[in-house]
Image 1: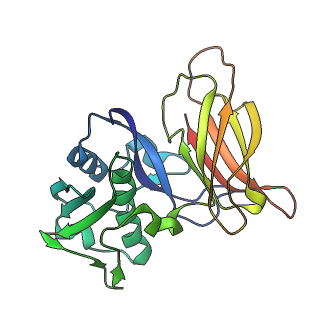
Image 2: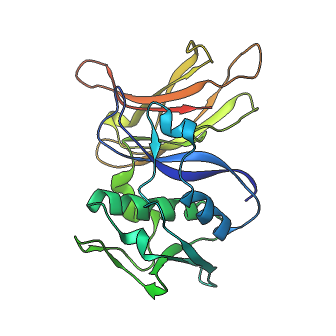
Amino acid sequence: YSGQAPYFFLDTTGPGWEGGPFLVPVARIAEGNDFYGAMAALLQGPTADEAAAIPAMSTAIPEGTVLFDVDYGADGVVTVDFSSEFVSGGGTLSMMGRLAQVVFTLDVFDGVEGVRFEVDGVPTTVFGGEGIIVNDPATSADFESLLPAVMIDSPVYGGLYGANPMGGSGTANVFEATVSLALTDADGLIIWEGFTTATCGTGCRGEWEISIPYEVDAPQMGSLIAWESSAMDGSQTNVREHPV
């Protein structure tokens, strides 16, 4: 791909957010089908503004990790070779988080069927002191536990969109598969509100999509907010918010 692309970081919890940290697709500018460039940019972590946002973006990839090589095979599997810093520090959640960041970021490229990991040139499927075993190759399906109950895939966090209506899509595992959404302007005022239904819910993850018409006086950063309405009292739970 080229232009705006999602690189995956991790969030911290905010008001109405359940559990976590979870994966978040964050907007970056990519040029061409450059796997190495994508991994090098991922190692740079979130920007200062993203790290200071609420919820804040973070990375589980340890500082000092060096990218040695990225190779795309004829079988569609991308092999990524990191320095030993990649497997240093952190517990199970941190280790799973960094593996998932790599896999999800590469998975958006056309033709990618999976990811193999190498550490200092040695093929590796067991990570951390807890002995986390990953498939060879690893795929995004292996890290579904790091997806929130309501996941916004598009628009990505911090993305720039000129289309009207704006398309929204993602996945969800929520009560009766119902995903509620609202679009706000730069002042936080709601300029559109509605809901859609995922293809599966209440115990399984389904896909959802929606078309969002809006009116604003001038281009500006707003937010797309998605949530599950509580079956108990209708309150917002599992809230996700992407500035767009």
